[in-house]
Length: 237
Image 1 (tube, rainbow, N blue to C red):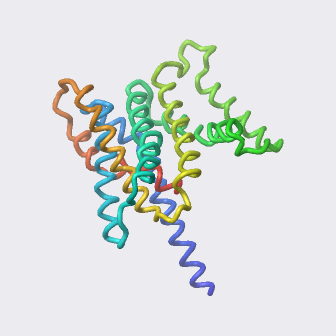
Image 2 (image 1 turned 135 degrees about the horizontal axis):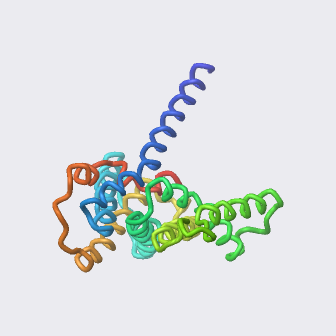
Image 3 (image 1 turned 60 degrees about the vertical axis):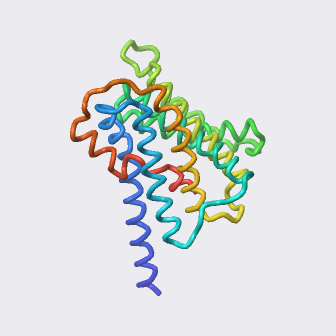
């Protein structure tokens, strides 16, 4: 029993470490990719490569993509708020914001989730400890922006990243109400969501694409690196 518990703990620790590597390094890979690709090209690459891997994994494990117009309608909405929109905002924001700050601002998602929950009534009031945490979190965000200093992180780039974090909060709330625990396997939902996000971003790429120099080797490698497109939905579903 002890050996089995130790093995499970080790496997769980390895999974968390891999997830931290994939998810935490995403902002670095985005920064590298932007040296040779436009923000929407980076967004499309993340969605398309993620969709390819997850669709293969979905069918390899004996699952299928969801069926039904109603389910796909919810999936498209979730794909927009959880993938297409935040991925694009992160790419736009990181044109002027470094990867470290982008990762810190992304951590404000739980704060937006609480505020959204209060607005929708799913949060039945806040205990003093949670209220203190919420106020402390937003105080920290204000300190990062440092509006009283001319060298603070104010600017459209930082605001775009905050918008991406808020978009995640909207997506998680929406998915919790319409898609999660409805009988569809998580792998099927994740694959379908990235397929839908790929379609959404593919529609916008030709409109915004402009002539760019040949990407350096680092940006080219980034297009194929799984860390660049690892979907946040893996960690939240």
